[in-house]
Image (tube, rainbow, N blue to C red; front, side, top):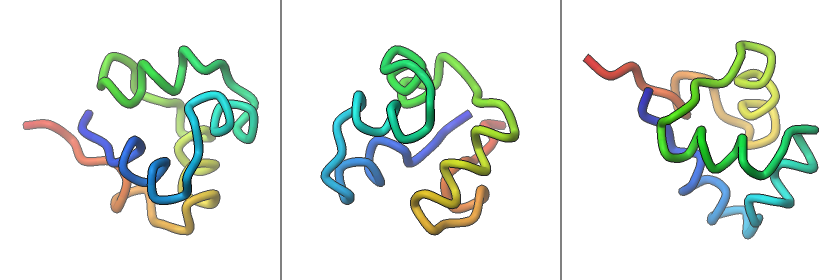
Amino acid sequence: MKNRIKILRAEHDLTQGELAKQLDVSRQTINAIEKGKFDPSLPLAFKLARLFEKTIEEIFEAEE
């Protein structure tokens, strides 16, 4: 799944570690999501959307 997390994280001047701490996940989880190697759970996707004040659809895009 494509996502804009790395871009949004940079816009908010957050490191992977800082974002991970805010979401209560590991830095490795953030790295895997950014690289498209791991799709977050629905609760985690909602946390990301709330944190960045975006809809889930604005952050994630299904790959065809």
